[in-house]
Amino acid sequence: MSNIYTRTGDKGTTALVGGSRVEKDSLKVEAYGTIDEVISTMGVACSFIQDEELKAEIVVMQKKLFVLGAELASDENGMKYLKELIEKSDIDALEKIIDKYMEKIGPFKGFVTPGKNRTSAMLHIARTVARRAERVIITLSREDKVREEIRKYVNRLSDVLYAMARFEEEK
Image (tube, rainbow, N blue to C red):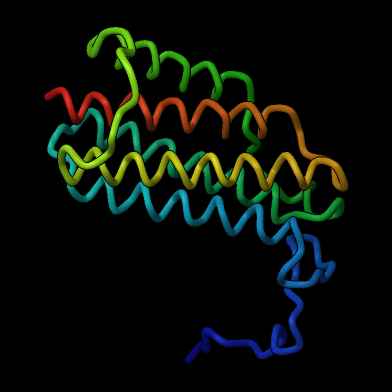
C-alpha cells in the first residue's frame, strides 16, 4: 500500500520538480498553489454547466493549467523533465474563445454583479482566483524567472472566464 504522506514536508519545506526544496510559503509555492485553486474552482463551475462545448473548453483549459503549474513547480533542473510548456498557440486559443463568447453576448455595458445564476457565479469566482494567481506570478517574476507565455496565459484566462460567465448569465 502506498501512503499519501511522506513526512518530508513536516518541517515546512516542499520539493520542487527537479529536487530542490523550498519553504512552503515561498512565492513559487504560492503561485502554483493558486493555479491549483483556479483549476479546482473551474471544476466546480464545470459541474454546473449544461453546455457541452463550454464544458469541453473548460476541461482543456484545466489541462493547460496543470502544464503551467508544473512549470511553476519546477526548479532549473526540473524544467528538462517537462514534456509540454504553455506556448503562444495556447494564448491564441484563449483569445479565440474570448472573441467567440464576446461576439455572442455583445459589448460590455457596465459592471456585472455576480450571482445571476450558480454557473456564472462560479465562473466569476474562478476569474477572481485567476486574477490573484496573476498577481502572485507577477510578484514571483521579480525574484525568479517566469516565462512571458505564463503571464500572458493567466491574464487571458481571467478574460475568458469573464466572457464565459457573462455568456452563462445571458443564456
